[in-house]
Image (cartoon, rainbow, N blue to C red; front, side):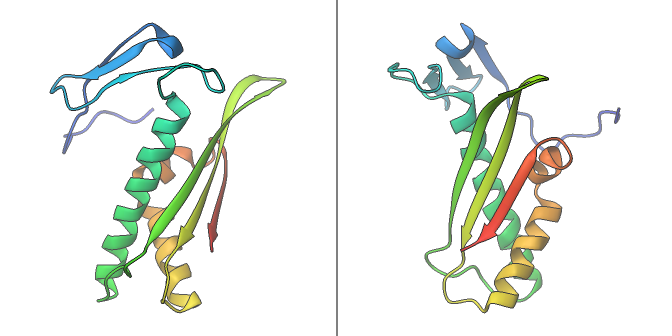
Length: 138
């Protein structure tokens, strides 16, 4: 296990009620209701939150990679993220997909940005060898 190191930022969230509960950050910027995936509840779920965080972080990693190549991400850059809750012989697990759209870039440059982002993004690092991941350039 890795040792804790100096943090650049720490998110602090208090959750009660599990998947049918609520989560609130210490600064109040996040204050959401939670619902079980597929239910008719009026809240979000951890899989949606993970997909939002991963895709936002991945786009940020692509922007850093683009800057190293002395380009900017094109207007219309978008990521469609899917995080699936699955069940198998070992219990519950996650799998994920990112569909990355980098309009106007050559396929080679776009693929380079995706590959570099996947190597650098903290969410991608956390998922590596821990869940099935498919990242597609569309």
